[in-house]
Figure 1: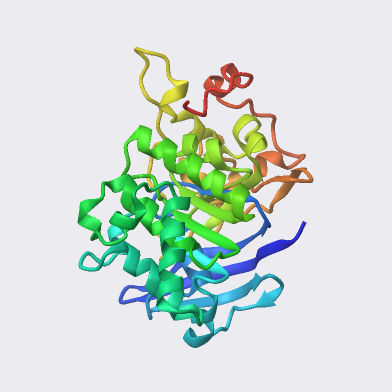
Figure 2: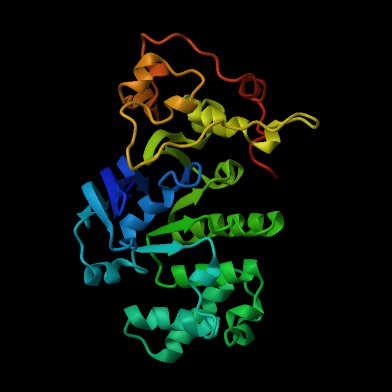
Length: 344
């Protein structure tokens, strides 16, 4: 299957007054055509920085320290702004958490889609307008001829997100970055947006990198899942492997915190402690201080990626053949055979 995006040993830093913040550290993964890769983890773990580094949307105090970004086999790591402008929208596109970050509040949504098309393609304004109306119809907006002329404040949150999707997909990109696109929506609207993304993936042959802190959402939409912590991918595999055979203690903690795994009257689980400062990342496993199963080596050496299956990897010393055998938390063992992670 064709590889749309390949990230090789990517490291991204920010230069601040307090020093260098290592926001993304030696990250590697790939995305195939028509695949949905969910990237999950706590806020501040590097999910958004990683995705925005691919589209070169980071602030000026950021820099790619090392690694490669390959889009359809072409190395774009050192692309300048003019080169990236040709890629954004046509090959790579992005949907943000808050649609009002993308939509201009003073311009009708249909006109904004039309302008996106005119910026990249030599077509008449009338043709661009018709395509914009077709895109609004594709994302499930009714009465498009009338709503084409409406400003964003006439739309609900879910409808605005559909409008943003229409803009992002207007030029038929190969890869869509969806950065927490359902977080601000209620559960019913959230489900509709997820189903819409899955339908568009099939209809357009679209690849999606879906960024979220909500594991239930990731379980519903993802083919594969990458778990990030302190700027690194600590576990990656097929969705069913990561959710029903997790190997990293951080993944155990995230899954144990799901409300769907807690019975009525029980206390909601949580991961104690705080992530480390990436001004001075720890020498060993960044999760060691929060890991109840940490060994001496976790504080001294960063674990490599251990292969569990050809599609499933995790960076934890518990997978070393010399490590003691540790049973996963009882809550995960109890629900291992029950698909309760996906709500609805």
